[in-house]
Amino acid sequence: MTGRRPLHRSAAGAIVAVLAIVVLAADQFVKQLTVQNMSEGERIPVLGEFFELLYVRNPGAAFSLGKDHTWIFTIALAVVAGVVIWKAFGLQSRLWAVVLGCLLGGVLGNLTDRLFRAPGFPVGEVVDMLSLPWMMPAIFNVADIFIVSGMISVALLVLIGLRFDGTRDRDHERAAAEAAEGTEIPASDGASKPVTPES
Image: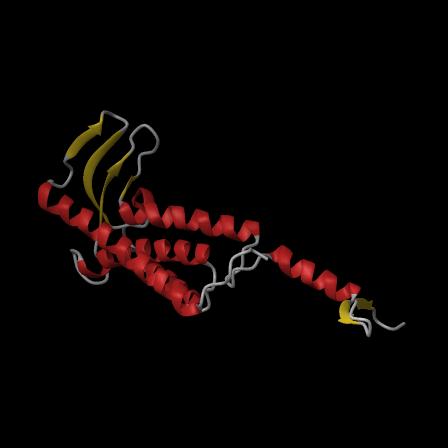
């Protein structure tokens, strides 16, 4: 086993909700600062050419792909948010709760733009402002950071075999092996002896 007691489902759900709200609030706060203090297309160097602020509105996905089909991304974000919320109800793992809470917050951040920003529901343009010119041409935002890191974390948790109930795949394999070998029952002298299936 993992050595830590599984979370109660309500506690795991609370972690997901709180983190999602915090990430959503941080994302929208940064976007609002950008809209109020920068002109669209304005570039502000922060760390030379390593990191800069560049205010753009993105109607599509990463690299502005699919900009003529914004509504498709709105539906996709809504579906992802629904799946994460559904999975949150069965969680008993702290790590899964943290990862899904951050992922949900990122998804809701961009979904909020799609629903409420110009040109209007449900084809709003996402506000992007973070740029790393030396690494990639894409311009992103706070929500994107949590979406990408959340998806990577989901993949890692799946690879290490951590389940939503806080157990690992190897724990179930060990339990199955022990069951196949037989269980122990108390003997009459107080000791225990293994019981094996009869042939």
